[in-house]
Length: 135
Image 1 (cartoon, rainbow, N blue to C red):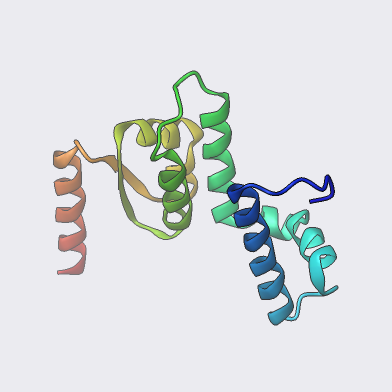
Image 2: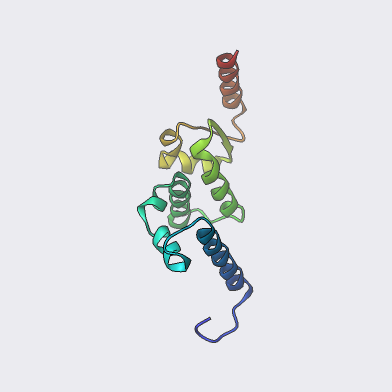
């Protein structure tokens, strides 16, 4: 916006996202209020230590620095995995994401069993053990 050029659709979407984040920050009583406080928080160890951010950052770094081409669903996969992995006992993902997660050691870090969608024997075995535990 400082250039005086008309922002494109993606830039407008980003501005709206930042505006929503500032609004939430202010509503939650963030201090200092406004973008300065939000930026300080996003740059803090408190934010970096959140499991969701750790998983998302690790997966994105692997995708961006790896030799495999980034696929159209990777962004959504990474976001969903980051939201669930730290809190789930079982997660089913595609083979490629399972490989990345295992390479990064994330399933062990969060004590989550991760299977690929093609590994039905492993999933059945996990569910049978879970059922015996509960029964």
